[in-house]
Image (tube, rainbow, N blue to C red; front, side):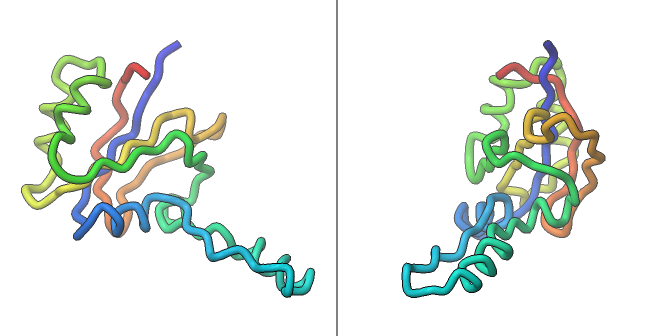
Length: 131
């Protein structure tokens, strides 16, 4: 079976700020002193996930990677199977980009999805990969 990864690039000040955008964020879980209604309200608003909200697609967080800092292209070279894929991606990224987000096709479940750029990430394309 072929596997694919959707690759995005962008600029974030820190790894933590990148992950705050690309990963699910949870408020602290209410304690026993909260009512059932308050707990239900907490469940309703959690998690928040800015990347998923902007993409407007189903995502499973187990199949998303955020790579910040050095070594991004070397890592891509170990998982991408197309000969010139890393070169193509590096041509699409900006000189200030320090973050790559990889959304593996498994993250989409069995749902079809179009992957646009977001307010913080530039879509670089869909590439064949090995897991």
